[in-house]
Length: 467
Image (cartoon, rainbow, N blue to C red):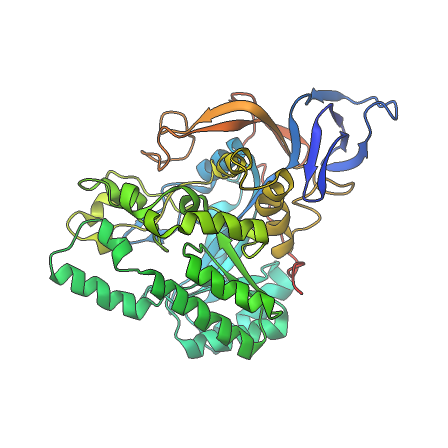
């Protein structure tokens, strides 16, 4: 096996930052050394002077090739993982899907077929349960024991598609409490939202902005609280995905302060985009920003509070909920009917940069940036310390990040299979210089030198983040 020395950089982990050299042998990190302390001869040396050396990003919420709203997410596992690598993410955990009436194992097999041999970076799966019955509950045990799938996503939204009622949710939570898995929850009151959507359309209110108006904060807060109480009854760990509203996160904070294993995730779109300027853009432009939970009003200060919740660890993880749909032909399915617009925003390439801008702006510390984007996601979903940190024995997933670069985000420069950018024209300080996946350089400067098929499937352990 060949050896690589990354020299002269500032190593940043969740524990702190210091100037260290990183020695890699084959696919693993073998040593962190004080510069010059031990003579080292390596097959290759990468000079990281003036740059940060960080663990590769771990995005635990992506939807490559997801069928939704009569179409499919536009990024394949190949294009999506290449885009992730460009942005400094070296591991994704995507969602395999069981729809109502399908066998759980059949859904998982379908996702393996999509991803196998096509990923440029390592990947794992959560399992979406779209139909809770005796067979799917038994399948949960099998997936935990034999497939390395230790987290299951349920929906309180989308009746007729993914929705589970409270009784079904409780049964799945009880099963998770017994087998050690984590329940992930899309927390919105879907049946009430459907009433509001039908009423808005009946009034002729069909523009994209109504997607946000008919999914009010109260619907996220109420469902979050209800999910927390169901998890309390079942004794199961609960992870609320894509949190957008201050009031909902406050319910998570209350539960955590009481000692519950309840966790929250937010996404870049909720930290940077808003209902008025983006979802409410003139004409049909707002369709580009339709996602669920929706973007929130800039007048209610949700963004400021979400950044604060990240600092105080009331929110633990930043993922992307990457689920891209092209504006032409896909988002346009909802012209004249906002409820038919496919839900999703593409962000897998930009998460590390957008969150580093939070460091520049004083919203996060360097270590907290790494913690929320790499370390805690790996711990939360059974990948740590193989992923998410730089220690001897860990996979050599390493990003050399240049804090003095500038990155301008736009459709002409991004690598996602998407015909627009939700962050068009946004310039952030910092940029990804070099990316290594399991010791192999896959991105250097402005060149991608990785390949589809390099990525390996990850069998995950139980969460290492529980109380």
